[in-house]
Length: 117
Length: 111
Image (cartoon, rainbow over all chains, first blue to last red; front, side, top):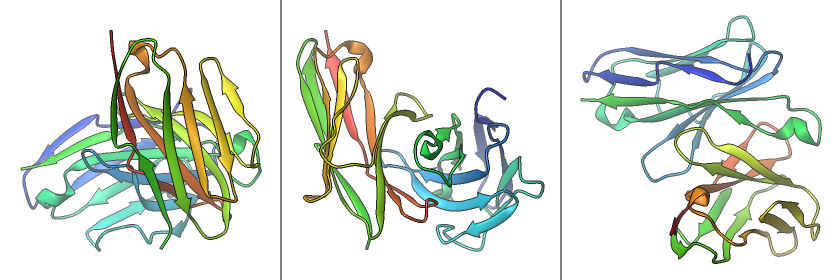
């Protein structure tokens, strides 16, 4: 597609519910990142995929967070048993990393704003 | 610990003013520094800086990197209300898969 697409745009969940956030990266982009952005803060790294391989998940805050990208394109971030502190904007970004120059730009989606009540 | 610090945290200026936003970084195996503009949710790319001392320009915006002193600045001249946004800088690790973001500078340009 023309850009990174995320859905839903907004998600309200009751504490304890499971949620699934979807990211459609730019077609052909190898790298995919998930970030969590709390209000007034910069994006915080969650996890990184290169094609279908999850190469870095060091930023996932707990084992309630799980991400997958089974076919190397669409990715899903799942949060189990949501807590109020999970409320944030979840940004997905894709990139053609591996070469210097324009390939290192991250292209962000508009994010999913998650509110846990 | 790798980190990126931006200053000021927020800034309010009048249209036509010139502003300078600062970004300092401490990242082992640093590769590049990137600036983004975030108006609503999706940050949009402004500049990528890899070499020290080479200014990049795009219209009224310009940026430069100092790899010795570990900082970058983003200048905006003749500011307009449309420049109001959060400006994020991010340092890219040499592995190419780890971006460290600062907390951003919130710029408000009033008519």
